[in-house]
Length: 118
Image (cartoon, rainbow, N blue to C red; front, side):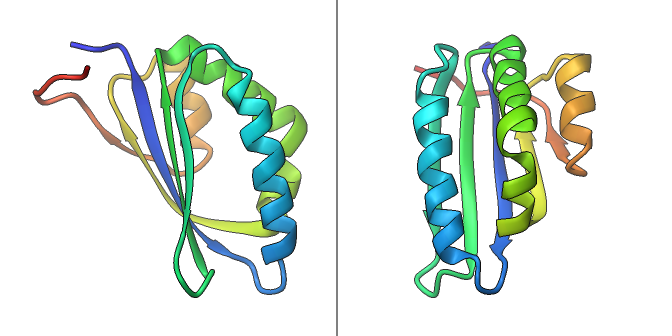
């Protein structure tokens, strides 16, 4: 089994904030790309630009906590001004520290049931 931790943030784009959201997304992608424990970090937007999903995968909970720390220090306030998170689905077995941080977003947890990761 993998120690990887994955989550998907489901959110709506706040009215009038799409341009700010695009700028913020670019900054966050650049910053996150420099985190060595980040395995995947992809943003998806509906055709009408009203709903956004953010797919994140980290090597383990420690790597996820690096990202969460950076997010909190640099981006959280602007992020919440651009987006309204509606759900966070977490996949894997987060550490107690990671779970506490993700609980701030009212996360739903899905523990490992089976399968493989390459």
